[in-house]
Length: 598
Image (cartoon, rainbow, N blue to C red):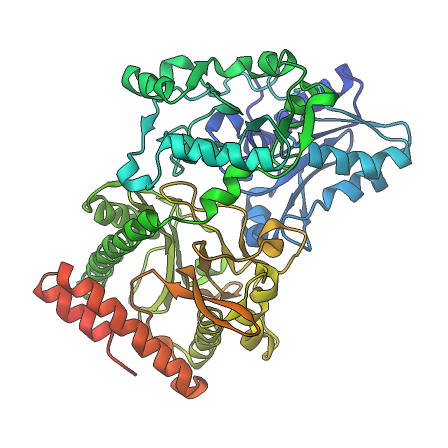
């Protein structure tokens, strides 16, 4: 059994020879195009040792490379050291820059292999578009990982559970009807839904198959009258099975979805989204039945209903209380000359959140970046190797919770000692960018790519920038990264091209990172709301829902305008009013001090 990275690469190259392939592509995804996957699907991590959430490996007969974006450059450089895998730094996040590389570096007559369950139709078509003019063939029917990954973890078998309508705001039947209406508008009589969060939202179910994301491995095929959920039957409790059946949802084994598609009535039109549906599933559908279009529940769930919004507001209060107790604990530890590690702080944060009602777990591994580690954008502290926190420098803490009544994601950067003039300048520039986006008013039809630059403008004026998008959509007790909307520089991504609409919940998280020294990020979740109607159109804006103080020790007030100072003081009054009723006397005093006006 291959145990080292070099042994695994050698075993994979032996499989290349057996299958007459010249290159093999290993993505980060699973058969549902998920960002976060169960251990069974962490093939890219297994073959390379790289643990980031985004990246792709290509292995040829004489080269092995990892493509990832700037969030992971430092992490990848460390994890790939001495593995024989070269880091290819993507210029544009999420852009398929490996595709032209393959077309340029493989000789005519080469064959590229991939597992068709792990690539969407759109990804394969793009690969073919670049490679076939160069005489390079693409095979989508080869799995080279399973034969060599002998101790591969099994597929998860945890039971699913119902997410009560008191939280969801709309019943399963209502949501299915909404999906049917959407698919009919696109001319379809059936809709194949492969994305796990869309299935969970549509059926008001949740699971625990993937860490930090309350989802379960399944497929959903919605017809005009009935629907079929393809899931391992042992994962569906009897009472939930009965409830699903009463709502017209039958259960079939997970691996029977291909058979169902191959034998689906030929007079039916099946709607699929080519960007989120694997090429293997689409190949099972007869060409005359296939209808390419938009994934209906993705847009529906992005716009939170009034019930969901009300619950999200309550979840933000709970999260603010938990963070209050965490930072007071940290201050107490440092004042007592203790130096807790970054990993200890992450554990303490989970403990503080767990004391809140309806807490389920964290929404992603906490990023606790002390000093230079804060410059590693998706840093994760590990016990025994992470930094100890001392009463000096600055700390970046990016974390979130999963509650039955909402998903949170918040970043605060705090000074643990006297900040330097440079740190205060950089922090204030980031804060100005945050405020600019938070205060934006814009006409309907405005996309995230048009708004992203407003958060960067003050950094740009000083020749500075950050290498990640400014924001992403957030689910409701679902994935913390929820498409389609966001704020991004690239208009080829859904985050950059999707219009921002009322009810969308999105992160606002500009930052600045000085490699080897410190990282700064400020993040709240902001809700798109209607602002005003004029003769020039309907205008929208944002409301910050996250509730926790921004560290004023790091602010240079002279760099803020009067309007920005007013915004900050108003935000802190909002935080204080919302959180103080839920705190004890000592905590209330701490909160009032942190929310004092500047």
